[in-house]
Image 1 (cartoon, rainbow, N blue to C red):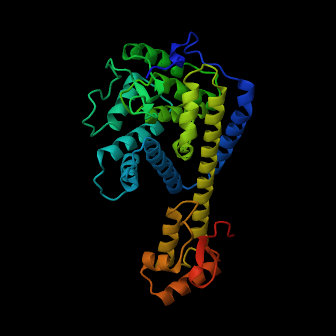
Image 2 (cartoon, helix red, strand yellow):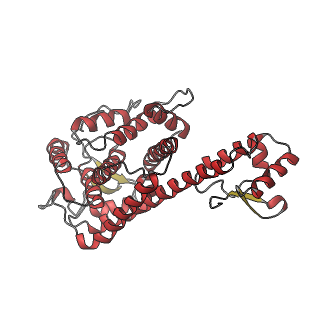
Length: 370
């Protein structure tokens, strides 16, 4: 299973990555412009809506960064844990260790984004991430075993798996992490996306832990961006990476063999820009919800308000395929005749738009209503 080509950490230039700053400049400029626009829109949110955005962004990041690694979590448990840690009212719920652990990392990274990154920060995150695991002997510490740390997949033959990456031996990890943290915490002239992309690749190349490196590496990327901006990003970079998971792994693998990493940074920067656009859409969506309920205050019956709030819970994309009369009845308990009147009234008031006829009729949130 030996690699013919050298890994980046075996090259003479390591860890001095190189890239074409001019090629990355347009991405960096668009990201800074978008960050300013997002900050401006965020200020218009009420305090409760700001809390909602923070909770949604942290829970989305927790869910998707775990799903990238093949771990499916319970969203309600993740949200409950995040709300408790942020001091937001939530229903009593027993939260499993995996959901509790990733929620702790997300909240700590959000609150302490401006703080330097230390070994103990990473150890604490790793202990949270591995909570409940009984198959690992090295939790909350860097790996020390002599076995090679490899990322492999099954090859064409059972006895010849494909090695996608091999990390530095464990006896180099402590020194490599000292150098990495000194680089990360130094006053950096690098723009946001470049610094975050290098940080992620650099950390993944060291692969300092027995497990959980991907999730911690993505948290470090978010921390780097927030530090450059001077505020939390409220974006879920992991959501975009999940939607491009194959390309993400392929790009990382190519970058793990070279020191000129412009291609990786372009890929990473484009993903970060999409995550930023998604966050801006979410902020505008929350604003639209507030404006809609303000406009219709005193004009909705309890059934209509319950159904609208349930629709907003689905996010900007709403119910897949739209809201049907049957869905409305299930949400509100209303009989068919009442459902028809309620939905027609919501369309007349501009809260919903109607598409189709008869049993194919579907309703969508009318977010652009005056």
